[in-house]
Amino acid sequence: MSVPEPRPGAPAADATTLRLGYGTNGFANHRLDDALAVIADLGYDGVALTLDHDHLDPFAPGLTRRVAAVGRRLESLGLAVVIETGARYLLDPWQKHAPTLLHDNPTRRIEFLRRAVRIGADLGAEAVSFWAGVRPESVSPQCAWDRLVAGCATVVDAADAAGVTLGFEPEPGMLVQDIADWRRLHAALENPARFGITLDIGHCRCLEPWPVPQCVAEVADHLVNVQIDDMRRGVHEHLEFGVGEIDFPPVLAALAAAGYQGLVAVELPRDSHAAPAVAARSIEFLRAAAATDNDPARTLCSAPAEATPAKEAPVHI
Image (tube, rainbow, N blue to C red):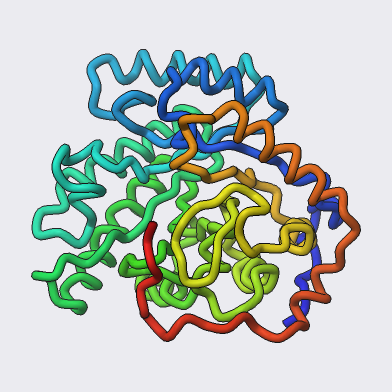
């Protein structure tokens, strides 16, 4: 598959023009105001803001006032924002990520996503990102799928009303774990205009059947949010750049060639213990990789990566 031509009005295919962001889930030990200041001081263009109990809790009292304060803070620091909804224990203190849209009672998840959409609208977020969740053992595959489609339709309605773009993320081990699954869901929802894809670059290396730059090309027309991290084949572990197996210059070149203009946000949720140092190393690495002369077509034309067997869940660490 060839690299797509840049879209009309898109900047020249130069990876150095990509807008870099950093995820607040990698600053879990910082106050949100402090995390935003560090991210801005390091030179990032934006932030991927995970709504969580200590970072703009969507269920806390005084939400309207707090959202307005965060909006002013983002504006003063010159940071763009996308909203992420992957908080682990926000909805249930006992079960990670529960309930999802696949559970018997997804009410709290749906309410959370509706609130995320409203917060995204108030902050002028470029996208609100979410995912399917892991299918509970007691729920049949067909039932889980039907619940997912119904839940996503509700969120799409809320996004349409608020004028917010959604980025649905394929997540290893979840009901929608790869690009093919996302396409099936997009079709089941009748191809809504505001239902784009969040692409995690590490996930592409973890389980997709193509080289990572080709994954970018495959979804270029629907790409609204990018998370970036290093990863190894078959192991779902977000790694610092240079620790995993991804060759990043061709990936960044592919994003630029696709005309992608959104944030490319570092996703290192387990590195909060050293957040400022990791964030500093990350932006230095990505700037150097972007400045490297690369032709994404070379990688796109190479042999596909060895594929993980269909629907086999990768190892989680």
